Image (cartoon, rainbow, N blue to C red; front, side, top):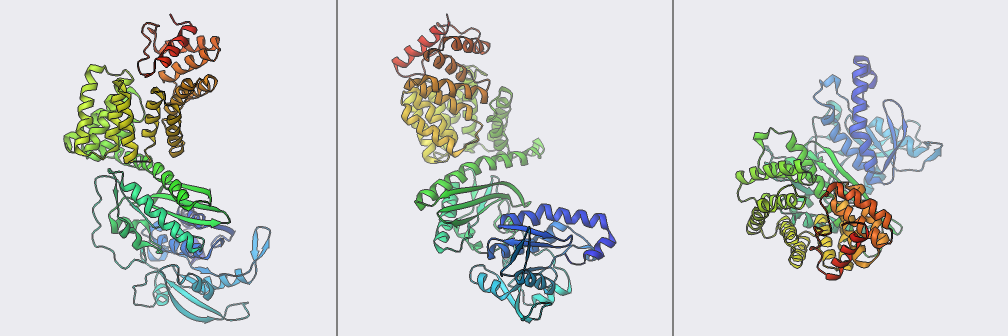
Length: 586
């Protein structure tokens, strides 16, 4: 840190607070992200060791570019600025510390560097010169204190388009907000679309292996394509995103240049026969991290591995984007909500599966349609919300099924490729006991969006009712793999309990049904499956207890009113009836 003692003398408490904020919000996260670890702290300095040279350089560039942004609008004599030195060399471990010429040269380079700049040795410059799109200005051979031989040094020019000397520029006055090494910054930012907008930046190859470069590019393209299939997202085309390849760019500049709210970035690193892929989603308008995940896989079939990671990333990002949009919409005045805001809020409420939230979601979706009658997704989610209200007995069939069907048909007419429209139609077909048609619509939904975990779950459930348990379990496994912490885990386990009932694996069925009741205590279907599987497993006393719990939800339940019509096969209906008879239902 430049001028630490002077700044402490001016304002000790304020300086320390700002320094801690920079560490917590910018410096420490950047070090972790780029494979570094803090070896030693000295109050006004850090000694950091990195796994790779380009990781060290990327980290340094990010910190130096973003310090002015995070430090705020301070007077020139109060600004916090840093010098950074980078070197490659042998080190001697000493407990948690490091010693040796490798460290000493880095320290001396830092001291010789410009304010707000990065000074590197020739070995560092030669390594990253062809890999990162960065410009270096030669300083010449420096005679450094306590270093026997002169060291050839270079200053990293953070803005390669500048015509003035980086050394003179940085040593004369601290830099203003230098957000990127990109040569062009639009005078007026591109307007953000009404719907969520995202750019997928080229994933970085952190291993130096050219084969991983192709893999990293392939993942980037696959994720971009998969997100583009989610038609309610605005996704920047691959050609524009790849202009940032090998560039260290602040995400807020990307928001400015591309007109997007969110940025997905990541890296690929190979070690032996294992591959590590990291990904993180950032709100590019604020720089805040929304989500981050690391994937460790065995390196076998590259294409299968690429598909696996792509599907996991996309399946996770979709609900994260919805959640971020929901939070953003909550901070708006109700009268200022646009059509997408209404849909984002409604979708969040629909997924909570309560009567109150469902009613509020319907109101928001009707408002969205009033604002934009051609908004297909507003029609499709409203159809699904109405269908849910009927299946949970919150609203009678005669008041919701017909309008739900109309909204679903409208959604398909407006956008035949909307997966939610086909999900809604499938849900309605299932309620009408048209199981083959329901399966066909759910299959349409997952064909349009293979990462639609919710649709895979409903497809699995419909296949169970048809008695096709083996196919159903494939869909349920896919849903759980795509979204392992899904809010619909209770429904998934209820479907697994049905599959066990179909296959006469009653003991397993009890376990899945009880798991479903723990995940969703109000799931009447799950309580039904506890009774059925317990009774048919010979655990009649447990079945009787489960029946008493079920009757709290359905006090008028009897053998005469027992609804088994959703099961397509006579054999399944007979066993279902017999299970309730054994449990003591009259």
